[in-house]
Amino acid sequence: GWYNGSSLCESGTWKIAANVTLKALWKANRYTVTLSPNGGTVSTNTLTVAYDSQYSLPTPRRTGYTFFGWYQGNSQVDSDAIWKNTKSIVVVAEWKANDYTVTLDPNGGTVSEQTMTVTYDKYYTLPIPVRTGYTFVGWFWDDAQYSDGIWKNAYSAFLTARWTPNTNIPYVVNHYLQNIDDDNYTLESVQQFVGTSDKNVRPAVGSYIGFTSPSAQTATVKPDGSLVVDY
Image 1 (tube, rainbow, N blue to C red):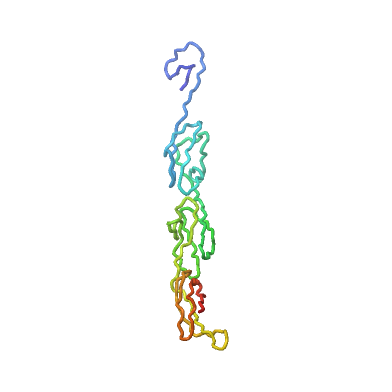
Image 2 (cartoon, rainbow, N blue to C red; image 1 turned 120 degrees about the vertical axis):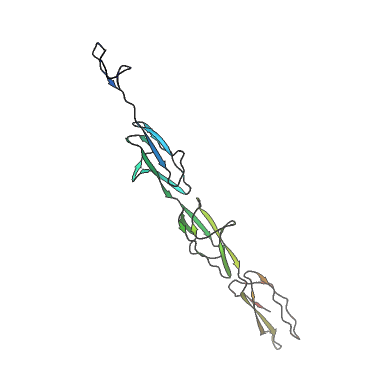
């Protein structure tokens, strides 16, 4: 309204016997800002602001994402500024999914890549490692198994390949007899066996009339099937 000093002057019959200067007094309008966290969380969903006054928008949070600002349509709204809009508005949080690093330990095998980048809420595919004489079980972090899917960890991970040794690995046992007329040996027989990768075996020695049998040997089955035990 119009004021004469601290007195409000209203429309009506003039009762002041002097010239006066009236001063207009104003009250800033208030508006409502509605906050849409867009998948995140925020301390308040509505905020009252006054025209020409300082305002501060809260910072939302969202697991696996970095906050990029409040937007009205395609325009970013300042989080801390003087309010200059003459209407209430709705602002929406904009986010960028975070990237994380997955480190892969093939644990005795080989793998096409030992580090890979994954994005939160995005599909990822883990490579399949190979190891001679072993069957791949899966990728593990401690006791938790990881497989292809949507990345939902808000942190980087260190995965180790877990293997089962194959039980059908071939190995050979050769039996030799010493020659009668010299100190050389002649192959008498060959036996084919299968065992488990990297496990010990103790093949039986042959028994031949007129010959002393050698002591039994303990050998480790080679995953590539190349173990040969000579008696």
